[in-house]
Length: 103
Image (cartoon, rainbow, N blue to C red; front, side, top):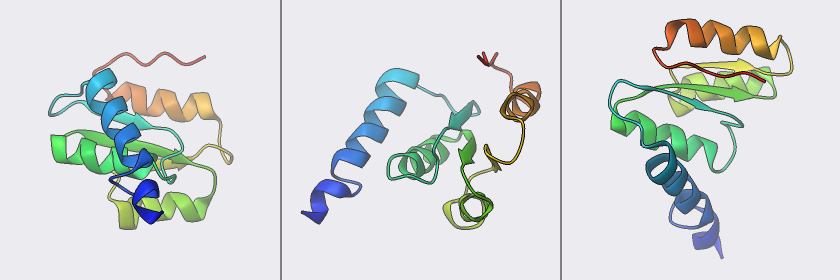
């Protein structure tokens, strides 16, 4: 059963397909991962970092944000519950060469 919930199971396949079949990032590009501390999100980060991307993630607590930065290797992360989401996304969009659309 654990094989289906790990990197070679649904989370890994979802991360791979979403990143490489949909987003198709190239080395040096920026990748934003929402729910980055989840089963799929932290795998997306690892795959994006292996591709040579700058990876920013969001999570719902300061503890998770700290985990993203210190253990998972995200370049930057923020707590979407503690600050203005649009302000946070704009901060990253200003340093990102790709236009981000915020609703």
